Image 1 (cartoon, rainbow, N blue to C red):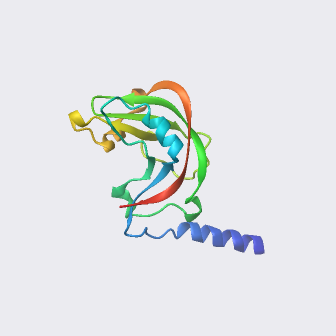
Image 2: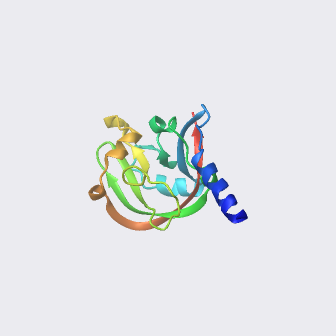
Image 3: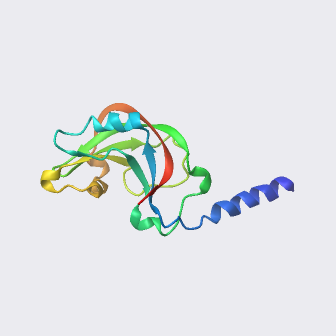
Length: 151
């Protein structure tokens, strides 16, 4: 019975996620410095680098809720397996098949590598890439942790 009560409490805590602090802009898998540099190295010359994170909850969705608290500071490494690029933006696809995160990302899990300032590229344009837009590359191991990112 004690085990059942403890599991029920854990379940209730997971369901009561609350709202994030007003200072939170988005939730992301933030890359460590080494991983950021590895991904930034893929950027075309003269492009503005954005190889900081993989968004989990976008700024527009952030005010609606949070992920379960036990996933904050979740640390793991993942593989970047393909790349997509157009005249505006470049992104890499993250393979999340073996990652034990209980939440689903919207669209293709990706890290925005860089944007082309000469065409007014914006990081959010990477969200428009479809699975078919990505070309395989030799896998790159990236590491980081889940956290809420401030404004």
